[in-house]
Amino acid sequence: MPMPTTTYPDPNDFLARRRKELSLSHADLAFKAGFGSSKVHASMIDMIERGKAQIPLARCRRLATALDVDPVWFTMALLWKQVPEAAEVLQGALDRLPKAG
Image 1 (tube, rainbow, N blue to C red):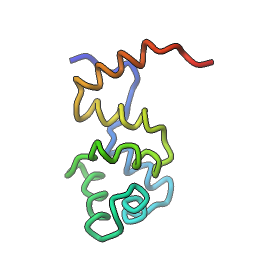
Image 2: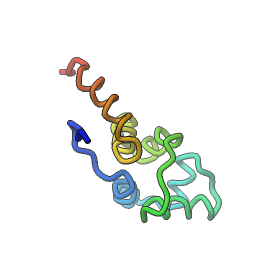
Image 3: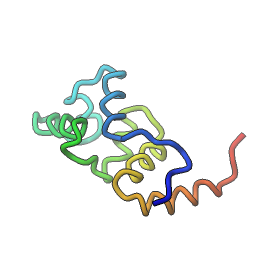
Image 4: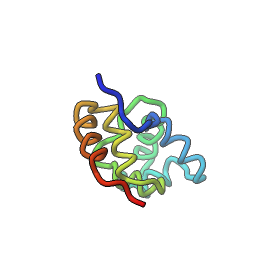
């Protein structure tokens, strides 16, 4: 299987590390990312961090915003883990874009 041309961290590990850097509780992140504010939603964030649940692709943009990271970068990290074939296609398209600066 082709490898990404950009190195992406494991999104679950990244989410846990970044949440801690921002001093957010599981409940804070769940609320900011639009999961809701119940203990069940906070528990979902904990399960994601421990690798017991996948990050829902539908929550990518809101999670990236809540974590204050680039949504495209976060989505690509997630796609390389969950749907590598789709990530490969998108990475090829991104690599063909003119470089900024």
